[in-house]
Image 1 (tube, rainbow, N blue to C red):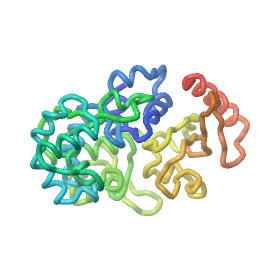
Image 2 (image 1 turned 60 degrees about the vertical axis):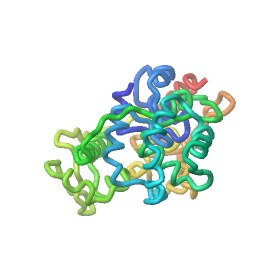
Image 3 (image 1 turned 180 degrees about the vertical axis):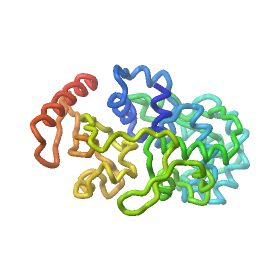
Image 4 (image 1 turned 180 degrees about the horizontal axis):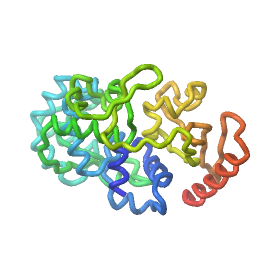
Amino acid sequence: MPRAVERLAGMQAQWAPAPYVGLWSRLEGFRRETLERALRRGTVLLLSTPDYALFGAALDVAPPAWVTPASQETAARVIGPLRGFAAEPRTRAEIEEWLEREHGIGIKGPNGVWYALRLQGRIVHSAESSSWKGPRRPSFVAVDCPEIDPERARAELVRRYLAAFGPATRGEIGKWSGMRVRDFARSLEGLRTFGDEQGRELYDVPRGRIPPGDTVAPVRFLPKWDNTLLDRTRLLPEEYRGAVVRSNADVEQTFLVDGLVAGTWRFKDERLTTSPFAPLPREARRELQEEAARLATWLR
């Protein structure tokens, strides 16, 4: 199971059940407890522990915009002691109280210092907070991460992204990773390149498998914020974008028919319902009903 998460270069986990459904759609015989035995989750992404260290080293060059230099300086003063305090799971309230008591640092209000502490200290959601029905007050714990050369980490991150979602443009790599093109430009050397219908240059790993254009993709159910829809315009027809990606950046649960988003789904009161955006061919309707029945049985 961790290997599957690594092949996807991490999974969206902002909504706790999302990676469970995402893995169910991708792995034969997947069981919830398999993931819960291995959980290490950040605020948004589910990663294996080795990948957390790798991606952290790569992305130190590109902190989120709300993590200001002042926030980073504040966090740097207490990272060592904080990692010791967070060796055991701690709630955010406990960490805030400890910072105020021991170091006179208040972080209530804007999240800049909080996320600087999380990023620099390699502090993630605890496994207990990341389960299907986690506690209402999540806890956080420091993860041991080896030192990794940042340039090597960025090169590996680019290759992992392309192995999961390539071929892709420089812009798509940058949008997915949050890095500027100049941060990873050297990592593109030696990669396979293509040209698409718009004349853009696409990059891919040297032996990336590209199925024939007439390959039929099976019906698949995707959870909220599934990785494949974050920046994959080729899977989400433009006429359906407004029904899938909301104004607050929320992303609906969707299903794919022949590799394209064809509707949304919901599970409520032990019942799974689908809402196609357009009439489906008879064979696609049958396959959708069968897959929906399988997922509903698994969710109950």
